[in-house]
Amino acid sequence: MTSLDNITLGVLTSGGDAPGMNAAIRATVRTALANRARAIGVANGFEGLVNGEFRPLNARDVGGILQRGGTILQTRRSKRFEEAKGMREAIRHMNEAGMDGLIVIGGDGSLRGAHALAQQGIKIVGIPASIDNDIWGTDMAIGVDTALNTIMEAVDKLRDTASSLSRAFLIETMGRNSGYLAVMAGVVCGAELVLVPEAPVSVEEVIHLVEDAYRRGKTHAIIIVAEGASIGVTELSRIIDEMDVGFKTRVTILGHIQRGGRPTALDRLIAANLGVKAVEALLEGQTDIMVGMKGLEATTIPLAEVTTHPLRPALDYYEVAKTLAR
Ligand code: F6P
Image (cartoon, rainbow, N blue to C red; front, side, top):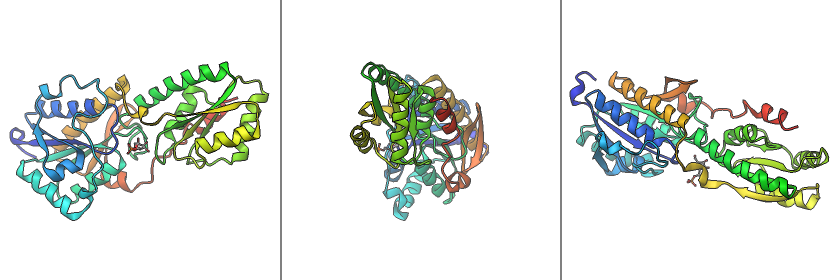
């Protein structure tokens, strides 16, 4: 991209919403404007791209959104965009609007969509946003820290009631096929046990560990179960109660509460860094890449690598959670 005066950049949010998406929209729009480029917001993710649901965004349009969860552009999971006809319509609408490049803010499925569009010659930069933290090429995705803080607050409260009545609480966290949130929650909430899809544990072992916690004089047991774990919370609760291990159980499924709320300072910082880096990369002519975090620095990585690499392993802290559960 040569003369920046006539450059128009689009931005969309796609897949599951994540706290901090608005902060990322704000950062991309304001960085574009600061570089004399124009910004267009695409409503409803790739579905809105297929339908041509575009609106210009100026500096004031993205005022007052930094602290809000969700996404002002709204988001969808689009089946139509996956078909050749949908992709063709999307490209036609982008050309008609004079869009020179597009920033896609979303999770692994959205980044696959971004890569497919880049393969058609569209200039694309992806920004990772998903509470699951299962995206290759970034230490942290936007939304993860806020979700973890939401879980921490909920588990702290559940522990109060669990110890008062000497109960075992089975708490289900989100994360589709990734145990990242469960493992990290296990560490920061001091859980007795964490169950994740990446490290299956037998029912017998779970029973043994809960009974052992009771024998060692614990006043409660906090068991964090990732939604993709091999045994579900309801089934596990039934079995533990049947086996009479000392604690009676209660189940809490945290669900979509983990996706909402004001983004934490860390999520706002990551969103600011990645938003700035994404626009700078596009204006430099880079394409088919994702911007990601290496520590607190923004880096770039080809989308081809992000989308073909196996999911990020979530087990870095698994042993730490186990060691600290004594
Ligand atoms: O990918 C984010 C996520 O919240 C997962 O953790 C969860 O499995 C899924 O989305 C839930 O999707 P939906 O909002 O469609 O119920």
